[in-house]
Image (cartoon, rainbow, N blue to C red; front, side, top):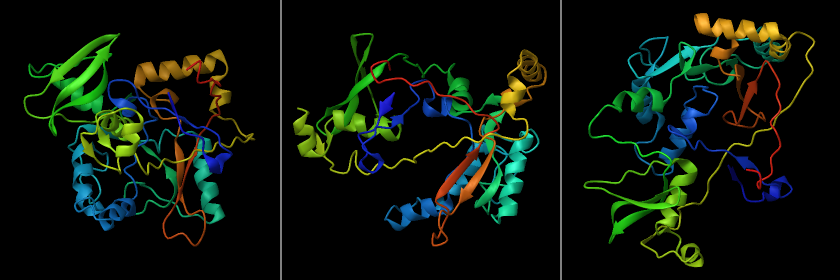
Length: 313
């Protein structure tokens, strides 16, 4: 339920920035589109001085985590825990019309956004198996819940990391107003996402001295870069009136809802087994761009997001 600070380039509007406050994090609430990131993004990290983060370095790990219908190839693996499914056969007809329209307009097409050619229009893959989400929580954490050395504390908010000098020794937390402490014998692993990890570091005394002093937080170790330079992609939605039937038309009548439910319950197929984001692509906003800098999602239906004030949230 986060909001950004007022953005000067957007007429000082504050943007809604949802995060997954649930077991599994944002991977438990997203639209299940399976995208790794463009190879040149990882190579940019390496060129910036981060050895071991180039695309050739991270590709083997991506291949190890996935079970892809293409099997073992240069870009995919078949033995990982995250199950990948194709939407090419089940995608709504209007999504294939979008892909054909992109071709007629002169844009390239691609059959695999995680393969050799990611630029262009196509149908997305999704991380799902038999119509059910295949996330890190389901595939890695759930099977390990029976281990004697694992315990999950739910409904707990970590407030800060506890230090002995500069060595992390545990965390301070709370649950329904009750103060809690958890101590570590070996190590503390912080994995709270791109937003909450730096936030937790700052609350724990790791960050820019002036900022921490402003909020009365004792400095454990000054790291000025913590919490700086976060970049997120801005999403802009466009709605078009279609001249052919969309998923809205199919699901609006009661019969359509019953049909979709039966498709899913009996065969794990149909619109309820897929992502709402079925087609789209990566494109260059200008011919001068060296790499694609725009991503499109083309949905076979439109929907409204209820407007809520921060007070209501």
